[in-house]
Amino acid sequence: MTERGSLFFIMASPVRLFGTMMPVLVALLLVIIANLPISFTGGLLPAPALALVAIYFWGLNRPRLMPPFAVLAIGLAEDLLSGGPPGLWATGFLAAYILVDRQRKTFTELNGAGTLIAFTGAMLLASGAAYLLASAIYLRFVPLPPLLLESVLTVLLYPLLDRPMNWADRSITRLLRNTG
Amino acid sequence: MAGSGWKWARGRGAKQLPLILCLVIAVATAIAGRAQASIFDRARAALSDWTAPALSGLKAPLTTVQNWIAGFGSVFTVYSENAELKRENTELHKWQQVALSLEDRLRSYQQLLNAVPDEKTHFITARVIGESSRPFVKTMILNAGSTEQVAKGQAVVNERGLLGRIYVSGQTTSWVILLTDLNSRVPVVIEPSHRRAILVGDNTPSPQLELDVGDGPVKSGDRVLTTGDGGLLPPDVPVGLVNGNGDGARVALFASPSSADAVNILDYRVPDLPQAAELLPATSTQQTSSAKPAVPVAVPAPPAPRIAPRAPDTADIPEEQDR
Image (tube, rainbow over all chains, first blue to last red; front, side, top):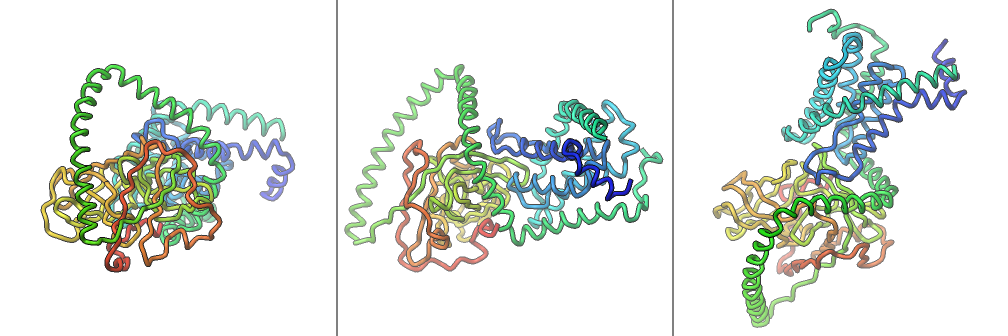
């Protein structure tokens, strides 16, 4: 099927369209949840970068449903809602996506602690890219501990989000199979 | 991990083009956003205006839960806290008498010198409906915007002291850049040495002092107040206490954003300088209060300047003006 034909096929069925867009919608939902301007810890802990979990998961398992332009849009949404400089997390998420894209074969074969280590690598790469870009923009090295704390929180939350992600992925499979 | 999977150059040619293009767009957005953030700021303001009712609704029960949790912890220390409060109260009564007599004496000196009376600083009381604590930004969202004449650059205080400044003002909401934020630069004066300094936020709870003018000693426990230089912030608003000595000392802030529920936005105007709000379209009502002030804030009245305020220059204008 050609690209044009496949696009028409997706657009023709709203259910299929929903299934196709689900990874991006879930990532955007996680952006909203992470950036709810309410702190449960009184500002003591930074909010985790939850959207990276969705980008990592579907970037690894269904790259067609999580294309680079979607990652860019999710990153810009994160920047917009977090109140920070635009483009920082967009760059960070894309850096992590590049890692996933390059190491898909290796990462797909991992399970358990291996998956967590791979995600930690993606998180550190995203944070590192955002950190370097922020330091370049502000013309000084920005404090590292808050970013490390955010990375640690995100990695700790990954196992909790992995199960709902798998469930959503199975739902996507069912939706696409039933409509196709 | 040097297996066959770890190959960085695969040469997929055109397939990599979208990825590279997206990365270029992201980096370009970051650079362009630093130079001209107004598009993003407008989008943020519109978004917070749109979601303000939901945020207010979410914030109320959460505040109740937070207060309950905080209250539960203090049950075990209530006796010692009560004793401490009684002792502090007695001491404060003594200081109140001293302050009243000094105020009296100051008034009589001002009358003797025929001094220009202090101007009152108008303020708008707003409720905090959101806060964001991210590695690159520390902000609060307030439920007052340009409709209530809130404008970019206005100081935000609570009953303890300065919290930050408005950096984005929507129609019904506004975003505050906190003193701890990476972008915050506030001109301050240190008492009793009268050293001028710039208070630089670095996303840690205690911002840093960059000493600027004067040569008096700076030591732990000195008071830090706003200077009013540049005519953007009112002078003499309490900021915090110096923690450390000399250049690079940090400031323990009086006002904590996490405990701020209702805040005051100071509508400070320097004579002969146009007020920030006047530059915005006049569509609002005067002195609107959207929330009851938790505690009446004693807003320090700015002394009328005898000379025209210095023209703002890049050295003492906080950077967030251009954010």
